[in-house]
Amino acid sequence: MTDADDADSTASATDANASAGGPNGPTGTEASAADDDFTVTPYAVEGEVDYGRLLERFGADRLTDEQVERFPDHPLLRRRIYYAGRDVDQFLDAAEAGETHSIVTGRGPSGPMHLGHVMPFYLAKRIQDETGARVFVPLSDDEKYLLKEQSSDEIREHARDNLKDLLAVGFDPERTRFVIDGPDADAVYPTATRVAKRVTQSTVDATYGEPPNVGLSFYPAVQATHLLLPQLLHGSHPTLVPVAIDQDPHVRVCRDVAGKEAFDVQKPGALLGKFLPSLDGPGKMSASDDAPGIELTDDPDDARDKIAQYTYSGGRVDVDEHREHGGDPEVDVAYQLLYYFLEPDDERVERLAREYRDGELLSGELKEIAAERLGEFLRDHQRRRAALGPLAEELAPYRLTDEERARLGATVV
Ligand code: TRP
Image (tube, rainbow, N blue to C red):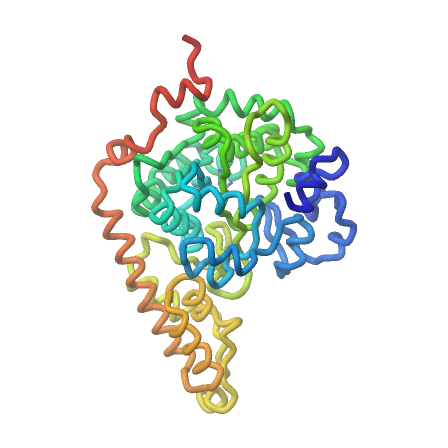
């Protein structure tokens, strides 16, 4: 039990209302949150995010070296892109003991998937390969319809397109389920209703800011349901939710509800990640931002051009200056892409940073290396995507079975 859990077992300080900082978010127990000049909620990420302060605001724990060592080895963990969590030890204990353990990580289908969007899925796949974790991949078509100025046809088209990217990751169909809120409403809705009865409107307002419509007042109950699916189907067991940290409010709402006696479940844990910087500088790489992002379906040559043209450089104004004073890899987006994702070899990535700082490596050269690695990643991903057959057929082994639907209350007879 962490301190945060001790707190959330009392009525006054719950996981959910530990949050703040939304446009209408009261500060809950964290009085100083209002002093920060950044906002992180599932619906808005603004300002320069201070990842350390955010943990205090949200009441999550920084990952320890020991925890990172217990996970299957992955650069996203080794380099602390996933840098914090909740109840990570319970998940690791179960994985090591060969007991049931699950991962839930989803996608809101509001546009093409970008490099940053796919990170948690490749991480989940790596963990599944090594520990046999069950993986649940919910698609919140309802959430994006309620949130965005898009028709349901547009959202459906994005969902179909995103599903191909998610299938291309290559999860084990025996141990993986894809759940799409609209088409799978029969399986999701009964639990969402039970959850919704136990979440107040003021918790929603405090956690996310006042919702623009009643659909988004209800949606947190749907995402909480996603996080409970593994346990509703396979009994109480540790669940880990790897997400970018803007999704943590959903985890907190779910943990509050999971603590109530109506559900025979453990609170889902979380693995919280930093945002992949957008090409033109720090911030969140998002399909909704103006800056171009790298899409998983970008032609590798176009992606190379995006890197050459748009990536914010930590280099100096000219070659002589750069040779003399060196560049700054910390703010250089080409370097950051290599560090986050594209160069898994620690020695190599450290050498690049060193050579860049020393002025030996020029900004253009660094971009060239990032573009090269990016091309390899995109070609591999796209090869697997192109090898897929018709979507319905590919998806079939990943859908909830009739028996699973029945267990979720989706039948009356
Ligand atoms: N809300 C998430 C997003 O906007 C998508 C999502 C739905 C999700 N259900 C989830 C993410 C469960 C993690 C776990 O990106």
